[in-house]
Amino acid sequence: MSGAGAPKVTPIDGTGLKVTIVAGLWHEVIAEGLLAGARRYLAETGAQVTELRVSGSFELPVASRAALDAGADAVVALGVIIRGGTPHFEYVASAATQGLTQVSVLTGKPVGFGVLTIDTDEQGIDRAGLAGSKEDKGAEAAEAALSTAVLIRALAV
Image 1 (cartoon, rainbow, N blue to C red):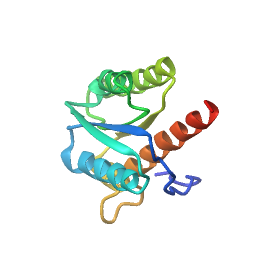
Image 2: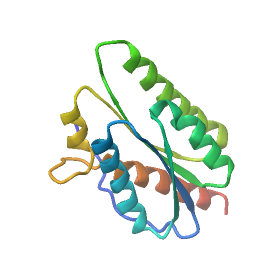
Image 3: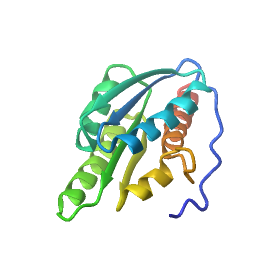
């Protein structure tokens, strides 16, 4: 696990910004850890937060686009894709990554990428912000989305 070189996650002022967390349901323990990290981070910022749950990571792009089109200033996309013995992992990981990138570029609004693409449950637990985890990718994705939304808001003034 790299983690080295990651910026320190610090709360910023998100007052007046609408952030939607879009989270997949697969791999419940890891997914709930990511969601808790994003919630914790955003609770400290003053942003208005809503949540949407989708079946899995493949559905993240379309739900994220809908949230941004409905008025969200940023989305935090959270999901867990664990490699199996078939090429399914590559298809879903690629579709989620490319789809979320496309959503951000087409809408001009940030999407915090909190989709774990991992080989094992242990790798996910280590990144999920749970007790004993080394990283909190849910909080990191929330910080990335919110800080970019703040930047975009400042550029519009």
